[in-house]
Amino acid sequence: MNILVINPGATSTKIALYNREENLLTETIQHRAAIIQSFSKVADQLDYRLEVIKETLDKHDVNFDEIAAIAARGGLLPPVESGAYEVNEAMLDFLVNRPRVEHASNLGAIIADKLLKLCPPETKAYVYDPVTVDQFAPVSRISGLKGVERVSIGHALNMRAVAFHVANKLGKAYEDCHLIVAHLGGGNTISVHQKGRMIDSLSDDEGPFSTERTGELPVKSVMKLCYKHSEKEMERLRRQVGGMYSYLGTNDARIVEERIKEGDQEAALVFEALSYQVAKGIGSLATALKGEVDGIILTGGLAFSTRLAESVREKVDFLGPFFVVPGEKEMYALASGVTRVLEGVETSHVFKVESGE
Image (cartoon, rainbow, N blue to C red; front, top):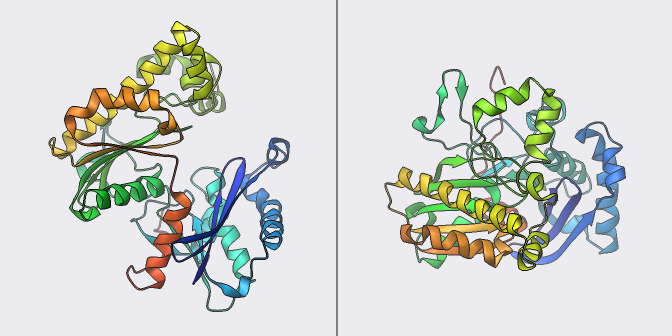
Protein backbone atom coordinates (compact mmCIF):
# COMPACT_ATOMS: atom_id res chain seq x y z
CA MET A 1 0.00 0.00 0.00
CA ASN A 2 2.24 2.78 -1.29
CA ILE A 3 1.63 6.38 -0.21
CA LEU A 4 3.25 9.29 -2.03
CA VAL A 5 4.00 12.23 0.29
CA ILE A 6 4.35 15.83 -0.95
CA ASN A 7 5.56 18.65 1.30
CA PRO A 8 6.26 22.02 -0.40
CA GLY A 9 8.39 24.52 1.54
CA ALA A 10 9.53 28.05 0.78
CA THR A 11 12.72 27.03 -1.06
CA SER A 12 12.36 23.26 -1.36
CA THR A 13 9.88 20.47 -1.99
CA LYS A 14 10.19 17.27 0.03
CA ILE A 15 8.84 14.08 -1.49
CA ALA A 16 8.70 10.59 -0.04
CA LEU A 17 7.27 7.17 -0.76
CA TYR A 18 6.00 5.00 2.08
CA ASN A 19 4.58 1.49 2.24
CA ARG A 20 2.19 2.11 5.10
CA GLU A 21 4.63 3.58 7.68
CA GLU A 22 7.81 2.12 6.14
CA ASN A 23 9.89 4.70 4.31
CA LEU A 24 10.94 3.56 0.83
CA LEU A 25 12.24 6.86 -0.55
CA THR A 26 12.84 10.40 0.66
CA GLU A 27 14.29 13.28 -1.30
CA THR A 28 14.43 17.04 -0.84
CA ILE A 29 14.35 19.04 -4.05
CA GLN A 30 16.10 22.37 -3.54
CA HIS A 31 14.78 25.28 -5.63
CA ARG A 32 17.04 28.14 -6.70
CA ALA A 33 16.01 31.37 -4.98
CA ALA A 34 16.08 33.26 -8.29
CA ILE A 35 13.52 30.87 -9.78
CA ILE A 36 11.15 31.06 -6.79
CA GLN A 37 11.43 34.85 -6.67
CA SER A 38 10.55 35.11 -10.36
CA PHE A 39 6.94 34.12 -9.58
CA SER A 40 4.63 36.89 -8.38
CA LYS A 41 2.33 34.50 -6.47
CA VAL A 42 2.83 31.11 -4.83
CA ALA A 43 0.13 29.59 -7.05
CA ASP A 44 2.19 30.57 -10.11
CA GLN A 45 4.89 28.10 -9.01
CA LEU A 46 2.60 25.11 -9.66
CA ASP A 47 3.80 24.06 -13.14
CA TYR A 48 7.47 24.51 -12.21
CA ARG A 49 7.23 22.48 -9.00
CA LEU A 50 5.06 19.82 -10.61
CA GLU A 51 7.57 19.27 -13.38
CA VAL A 52 10.57 18.87 -11.05
CA ILE A 53 8.57 16.47 -8.86
CA LYS A 54 7.69 14.32 -11.87
CA GLU A 55 11.33 14.32 -13.00
CA THR A 56 12.49 13.23 -9.55
CA LEU A 57 9.91 10.44 -9.31
CA ASP A 58 10.85 9.25 -12.81
CA LYS A 59 14.51 9.20 -11.77
CA HIS A 60 13.60 6.83 -8.93
CA ASP A 61 11.33 4.69 -11.17
CA VAL A 62 8.27 5.34 -9.02
CA ASN A 63 5.28 3.51 -10.50
CA PHE A 64 2.12 5.63 -10.21
CA ASP A 65 -0.02 2.52 -10.76
CA GLU A 66 1.14 1.27 -7.34
CA ILE A 67 0.19 4.40 -5.41
CA ALA A 68 -2.80 3.88 -3.11
CA ALA A 69 -2.99 7.47 -1.86
CA ILE A 70 -1.23 10.83 -1.96
CA ALA A 71 -0.62 12.64 1.33
CA ALA A 72 0.08 16.36 1.02
CA ARG A 73 0.99 19.03 3.52
CA GLY A 74 -2.07 21.13 4.26
CA GLY A 75 -1.99 24.83 3.45
CA LEU A 76 -3.53 27.86 5.13
CA LEU A 77 -7.14 26.76 5.07
CA PRO A 78 -9.87 28.16 7.32
CA PRO A 79 -9.79 26.76 10.91
CA VAL A 80 -10.31 22.98 10.83
CA GLU A 81 -10.33 20.00 13.17
CA SER A 82 -7.27 17.76 13.30
CA GLY A 83 -6.94 14.73 11.04
CA ALA A 84 -7.29 13.96 7.34
CA TYR A 85 -9.22 15.89 4.70
CA GLU A 86 -9.76 14.49 1.22
CA VAL A 87 -8.72 16.99 -1.43
CA ASN A 88 -11.87 18.31 -3.12
CA GLU A 89 -12.93 21.18 -5.36
CA ALA A 90 -13.83 23.45 -2.43
CA MET A 91 -10.32 23.05 -0.99
CA LEU A 92 -8.60 23.66 -4.32
CA ASP A 93 -10.72 26.74 -5.02
CA PHE A 94 -9.88 28.20 -1.60
CA LEU A 95 -6.14 27.57 -1.89
CA VAL A 96 -5.90 28.93 -5.44
CA ASN A 97 -8.26 31.90 -5.22
CA ARG A 98 -8.66 32.82 -1.53
CA PRO A 99 -5.60 31.72 0.45
CA ARG A 100 -5.46 33.23 3.94
CA VAL A 101 -1.73 33.83 3.49
CA GLU A 102 0.60 33.35 0.52
CA HIS A 103 2.60 30.28 1.60
CA ALA A 104 4.25 27.38 -0.22
CA SER A 105 2.23 24.83 1.78
CA ASN A 106 -0.86 26.01 -0.14
CA LEU A 107 0.57 24.13 -3.14
CA GLY A 108 0.47 20.73 -1.40
CA ALA A 109 -3.14 19.84 -2.17
CA ILE A 110 -2.97 21.43 -5.63
CA ILE A 111 0.11 19.39 -6.63
CA ALA A 112 -1.47 16.24 -5.18
CA ASP A 113 -4.59 16.78 -7.28
CA LYS A 114 -2.49 17.10 -10.45
CA LEU A 115 -0.49 13.94 -9.65
CA LEU A 116 -3.73 12.10 -8.95
CA LYS A 117 -4.43 12.14 -12.70
CA LEU A 118 -1.45 9.76 -13.16
CA CYS A 119 -2.70 7.25 -10.56
CA PRO A 120 -5.39 4.54 -10.68
CA PRO A 121 -9.01 5.85 -10.51
CA GLU A 122 -9.47 4.61 -6.93
CA THR A 123 -6.47 6.56 -5.61
CA LYS A 124 -7.34 9.54 -3.42
CA ALA A 125 -5.42 12.58 -2.21
CA TYR A 126 -5.50 13.93 1.34
CA VAL A 127 -4.05 16.66 3.48
CA TYR A 128 -3.42 15.88 7.14
CA ASP A 129 -3.19 18.22 10.14
CA PRO A 130 -2.91 21.49 8.20
CA VAL A 131 -1.31 24.50 9.90
CA THR A 132 -4.80 25.85 10.69
CA VAL A 133 -5.86 22.98 12.97
CA ASP A 134 -8.01 24.73 15.58
CA GLN A 135 -9.03 23.03 18.83
CA PHE A 136 -8.80 26.11 21.05
CA ALA A 137 -10.91 26.24 24.16
CA PRO A 138 -13.28 29.26 24.14
CA VAL A 139 -11.26 30.98 26.88
CA SER A 140 -8.12 30.70 24.70
CA ARG A 141 -9.66 32.86 21.99
CA ILE A 142 -9.97 36.00 24.11
CA SER A 143 -7.19 38.42 23.21
CA GLY A 144 -7.76 41.50 25.34
CA LEU A 145 -9.34 43.62 22.62
CA LYS A 146 -12.88 42.91 21.49
CA GLY A 147 -12.99 42.21 17.77
CA VAL A 148 -9.43 40.81 17.74
CA GLU A 149 -9.61 37.08 18.36
CA ARG A 150 -6.66 34.80 19.07
CA VAL A 151 -6.36 32.15 16.37
CA SER A 152 -4.78 28.72 16.22
CA ILE A 153 -2.10 28.56 13.57
CA GLY A 154 1.28 26.86 13.64
CA HIS A 155 3.23 23.64 13.19
CA ALA A 156 0.30 21.34 14.03
CA LEU A 157 1.50 18.44 11.85
CA ASN A 158 4.87 18.02 13.54
CA MET A 159 3.68 18.99 17.02
CA ARG A 160 0.94 16.38 17.07
CA ALA A 161 3.27 13.77 15.55
CA VAL A 162 5.91 14.21 18.28
CA ALA A 163 3.16 14.33 20.91
CA PHE A 164 1.97 10.89 19.73
CA HIS A 165 5.61 9.72 19.75
CA VAL A 166 6.29 10.85 23.34
CA ALA A 167 2.94 9.55 24.59
CA ASN A 168 3.96 6.14 23.24
CA LYS A 169 7.30 6.45 25.10
CA LEU A 170 5.37 7.19 28.28
CA GLY A 171 3.27 4.06 27.73
CA LYS A 172 0.10 6.11 27.35
CA ALA A 173 -2.40 6.98 24.65
CA TYR A 174 -2.05 10.50 23.30
CA GLU A 175 -5.66 11.06 24.32
CA ASP A 176 -4.72 10.41 27.97
CA CYS A 177 -1.75 12.81 28.12
CA HIS A 178 -1.09 16.39 29.14
CA LEU A 179 1.82 17.63 27.00
CA ILE A 180 3.53 20.89 26.06
CA VAL A 181 5.28 20.91 22.67
CA ALA A 182 7.69 23.64 21.54
CA HIS A 183 8.49 23.60 17.80
CA LEU A 184 11.54 25.82 17.30
CA GLY A 185 13.00 26.90 13.96
CA GLY A 186 12.60 29.74 11.48
CA GLY A 187 9.22 30.20 13.14
CA ASN A 188 8.27 29.04 16.62
CA THR A 189 5.04 27.56 17.96
CA ILE A 190 4.48 26.33 21.51
CA SER A 191 1.30 24.31 22.07
CA VAL A 192 -0.48 22.68 24.99
CA HIS A 193 -2.17 19.31 24.46
CA GLN A 194 -4.86 18.23 26.89
CA LYS A 195 -6.16 14.69 26.43
CA GLY A 196 -5.76 14.63 22.68
CA ARG A 197 -6.73 18.23 21.94
CA MET A 198 -4.48 21.21 21.27
CA ILE A 199 -6.36 23.66 23.49
CA ASP A 200 -3.99 26.65 23.28
CA SER A 201 -0.74 27.76 21.68
CA LEU A 202 1.69 30.63 21.29
CA SER A 203 2.32 31.30 17.61
CA ASP A 204 5.23 33.25 16.17
CA ASP A 205 3.56 36.62 16.82
CA GLU A 206 2.70 35.87 20.46
CA GLY A 207 5.51 33.79 21.90
CA PRO A 208 9.32 33.68 21.89
CA PHE A 209 11.34 35.19 19.08
CA SER A 210 12.89 32.76 16.60
CA THR A 211 15.95 32.81 14.36
CA GLU A 212 14.24 35.34 12.05
CA ARG A 213 10.83 36.26 13.53
CA THR A 214 10.20 38.76 16.28
CA GLY A 215 7.75 36.87 18.43
CA GLU A 216 5.73 38.97 20.87
CA LEU A 217 6.75 42.64 20.98
CA PRO A 218 5.92 45.62 23.25
CA VAL A 219 2.76 46.95 21.59
CA LYS A 220 3.36 50.65 22.37
CA SER A 221 6.75 50.60 20.66
CA VAL A 222 5.41 48.68 17.68
CA MET A 223 2.59 51.22 17.22
CA LYS A 224 5.18 53.95 16.72
CA LEU A 225 7.03 51.85 14.13
CA CYS A 226 3.80 51.41 12.17
CA TYR A 227 3.75 55.14 11.45
CA LYS A 228 7.26 54.97 10.00
CA HIS A 229 6.94 51.86 7.82
CA SER A 230 4.43 50.43 5.33
CA GLU A 231 2.46 47.30 6.13
CA LYS A 232 4.72 45.33 3.78
CA GLU A 233 7.85 46.65 5.51
CA MET A 234 6.42 45.84 8.95
CA GLU A 235 5.63 42.29 7.83
CA ARG A 236 9.20 41.90 6.60
CA LEU A 237 10.54 43.14 9.94
CA ARG A 238 8.27 40.72 11.81
CA ARG A 239 8.82 37.59 9.74
CA GLN A 240 12.12 37.80 7.85
CA VAL A 241 14.66 40.04 9.56
CA GLY A 242 13.48 39.99 13.18
CA GLY A 243 14.46 37.77 16.07
CA MET A 244 18.02 36.51 16.29
CA TYR A 245 18.79 37.87 12.81
CA SER A 246 17.99 41.44 13.85
CA TYR A 247 20.53 41.29 16.69
CA LEU A 248 23.30 39.18 15.16
CA GLY A 249 22.91 39.43 11.37
CA THR A 250 22.41 35.67 10.88
CA ASN A 251 19.56 33.19 11.25
CA ASP A 252 21.95 30.23 11.52
CA ALA A 253 22.17 29.03 15.13
CA ARG A 254 25.33 27.07 14.33
CA ILE A 255 27.14 30.28 13.41
CA VAL A 256 25.88 31.93 16.58
CA GLU A 257 27.17 29.05 18.72
CA GLU A 258 30.59 29.32 17.07
CA ARG A 259 30.63 33.04 17.89
CA ILE A 260 29.74 32.23 21.50
CA LYS A 261 32.67 29.80 21.70
CA GLU A 262 34.92 32.58 20.42
CA GLY A 263 33.81 34.84 23.27
CA ASP A 264 31.10 36.94 21.58
CA GLN A 265 29.14 38.25 24.59
CA GLU A 266 26.26 39.71 22.57
CA ALA A 267 25.72 36.37 20.80
CA ALA A 268 25.71 34.62 24.19
CA LEU A 269 23.15 37.05 25.60
CA VAL A 270 20.78 36.81 22.60
CA PHE A 271 20.99 33.01 22.56
CA GLU A 272 20.28 32.90 26.28
CA ALA A 273 17.33 35.27 25.73
CA LEU A 274 15.96 32.85 23.13
CA SER A 275 16.00 29.93 25.58
CA TYR A 276 14.63 32.23 28.32
CA GLN A 277 11.64 33.24 26.19
CA VAL A 278 10.98 29.64 25.11
CA ALA A 279 10.99 28.58 28.76
CA LYS A 280 8.62 31.43 29.69
CA GLY A 281 6.25 30.31 26.93
CA ILE A 282 6.31 26.72 28.19
CA GLY A 283 5.74 27.91 31.74
CA SER A 284 2.78 30.09 30.79
CA LEU A 285 1.07 27.22 28.97
CA ALA A 286 1.64 24.89 31.94
CA THR A 287 -0.96 26.97 33.76
CA ALA A 288 -3.57 25.80 31.23
CA LEU A 289 -2.94 22.28 32.58
CA LYS A 290 -2.90 23.49 36.21
CA GLY A 291 0.66 22.19 36.41
CA GLU A 292 -0.33 18.59 35.60
CA VAL A 293 2.26 18.03 32.87
CA ASP A 294 3.13 14.53 31.62
CA GLY A 295 5.88 15.78 29.33
CA ILE A 296 7.57 18.82 27.77
CA ILE A 297 8.86 18.31 24.23
CA LEU A 298 11.38 20.36 22.26
CA THR A 299 11.26 19.75 18.50
CA GLY A 300 12.08 21.47 15.20
CA GLY A 301 15.43 22.41 13.70
CA LEU A 302 16.66 24.39 16.72
CA ALA A 303 16.17 21.35 18.95
CA PHE A 304 19.39 19.98 17.40
CA SER A 305 21.21 22.60 19.47
CA THR A 306 22.32 20.87 22.67
CA ARG A 307 23.18 24.26 24.15
CA LEU A 308 19.66 25.58 23.61
CA ALA A 309 17.94 22.37 24.72
CA GLU A 310 19.91 22.17 27.95
CA SER A 311 19.34 25.85 28.68
CA VAL A 312 15.58 25.39 28.28
CA ARG A 313 15.64 22.13 30.25
CA GLU A 314 17.23 23.69 33.33
CA LYS A 315 14.49 26.34 33.41
CA VAL A 316 11.44 24.07 33.00
CA ASP A 317 12.59 20.71 34.39
CA PHE A 318 10.55 21.24 37.55
CA LEU A 319 7.32 21.14 35.52
CA GLY A 320 7.64 17.56 34.25
CA PRO A 321 9.67 15.06 32.18
CA PHE A 322 11.65 16.72 29.37
CA PHE A 323 12.06 15.24 25.89
CA VAL A 324 14.06 16.43 22.88
CA VAL A 325 12.83 15.24 19.47
CA PRO A 326 14.98 17.29 17.05
CA GLY A 327 14.02 18.01 13.46
CA GLU A 328 10.55 17.26 12.21
CA LYS A 329 8.44 14.19 11.58
CA GLU A 330 6.21 15.81 8.97
CA MET A 331 6.72 13.25 6.19
CA TYR A 332 6.15 10.32 8.53
CA ALA A 333 3.17 12.09 10.11
CA LEU A 334 1.54 12.58 6.70
CA ALA A 335 2.13 8.96 5.68
CA SER A 336 1.03 7.44 8.99
CA GLY A 337 -2.08 9.64 9.19
CA VAL A 338 -3.23 8.65 5.71
CA THR A 339 -2.35 5.00 6.44
CA ARG A 340 -4.76 5.11 9.38
CA VAL A 341 -7.47 6.44 7.04
CA LEU A 342 -6.86 3.72 4.44
CA GLU A 343 -6.95 1.04 7.13
CA GLY A 344 -10.19 2.37 8.61
CA VAL A 345 -8.64 3.42 11.93
CA GLU A 346 -9.50 7.07 11.22
CA THR A 347 -12.23 8.61 9.10
CA SER A 348 -11.34 11.49 6.80
CA HIS A 349 -13.24 14.76 7.05
CA VAL A 350 -15.03 16.58 4.23
CA PHE A 351 -13.66 20.07 3.68
CA LYS A 352 -16.28 22.79 3.39
CA VAL A 353 -15.99 26.57 3.28
CA GLU A 354 -18.45 28.28 5.60
CA SER A 355 -20.20 31.38 4.33
CA GLY A 356 -18.16 34.50 4.94
CA GLU A 357 -14.78 32.75 4.76
